[in-house]
Amino acid sequence: MGKKHDIDVLRGRVRGNVLTSSDDNYDNVRRVWNGMIDRRPEFIVQCTGAADVISAVNFARENELLVAVRGGGHSFPGFSVCDGGLMIDLLPMKGIRVDPSGKRVRAEPGLTWGEFDAETQTFGLATTGGMISHTGIAGLTLGGGFGWLCRKHGLTIDSLLSVDLVTADGNLLHASAQENDDLFWGLRGGGGNFGVVSSFEYRLHSLSSVIGGLILYPLPQARQVLRGFRDFAASAPDDLVTVVAFLTAPDGQPAVGVFPGYSGEPGKAEQCIQPLRNLGTPIMEQLGPMPYPALQKMFEAVAVPQRRYYMRSNFMDEISDATIDIFAESFAGVPSPFTAIVIVTLGGAVARVAPDATAFSHRDALYTMSISGSWTMPEDDKVNIDWLKDLWARLGPHLAARVYVNELADEGAARVREAYGEATYSRLVTLKRKYDPGNLFRLNQNIPPTD
Image (cartoon, rainbow, N blue to C red; front, side, top):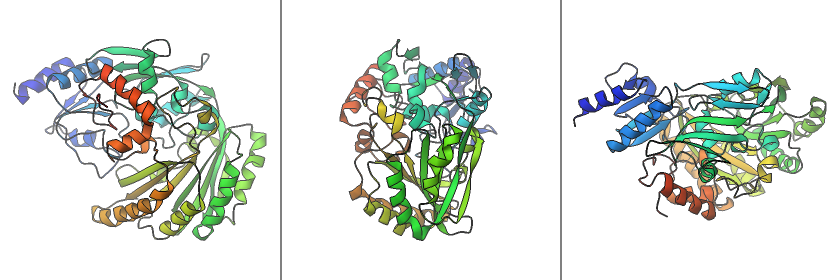
């Protein structure tokens, strides 16, 4: 069967557009968030609904094509797009329906968190979502999902009620605590290993305005600031999620930013946040009430689409003096003003869920830390990657072997196991064997069907 006949068959099966390299919009659609990724799929199916997803999955399986699934396209290793093969593009699927009285929402996988929040916030409702508004809801949810509300309401998956999923054999399954509960367990943290989600159902929580912003300290105060922050975080209330970031200040100097996000009673906010103002001598402060969607956009400047990204991440059980020294020393020589080291507080409601209740097992981690190397020009690849690799090598002896799957680069099978722990990984292998024995969905942080 020749390629021309193949695409005619595919186009006859779907309502959405089917693109090849000869189509004008092909380059725009294959482009993803990380500007270092430049891959060219043979076919792109722009799905309009579950029927299109089923047809695309069946076509890929029948023709033994590599499958890439694109939601928001934020997979920084580039799993959202492939060379050759078929890209299942979910971006056109942006349906969302809020049930305000029931505090539930049904949402399609092409939505970004900004689009999701715009709809739910109309009714004064929200659920834990990503800290970058143009991140897709699908990938973040399937990996676990932390954000500004996680200490109060848990991870995104802790508010996930059900999922509709297209499996490798082209079936559409409904997964919840009552139906296909084994699959529902695995989808809450196991990533895209088991199929293509066509619909998510979430529990929503009452939320309107929050209190947040930035307190900026000069880099020479980094050791003092992080040690004080470490002590503060140990007893912070669940209403507060705090992010500490090494970043470049508006004046071009390396600095340390403290970003509080408070979602509790407004009258208690000042007392809660005040200690963060006293960690050192701030050089800038912008704090106050804001709409929740504005808080969700606080980090847009360090996640601009189409910059070049190289990243490493790990959970942290503590912020030790040794790691603080390494961060401060390394960031003094950071080669790009767009690079950031970000530490997010976890705990609270995240830790109150049993580690085997979902496929996200690292419930007791106190922080997640990511180093986001970012720059604009290809000729600067080496200096930026070398800087990050050197920093990562210095940190290695001080880090436990566990990592958040959504912040895992393409680092090999052993590292994927570290994202789950051996007991959870073994359960996921069993699920993979049941729902995708041929490993059709392998362009991800892959869990092969054989252990």
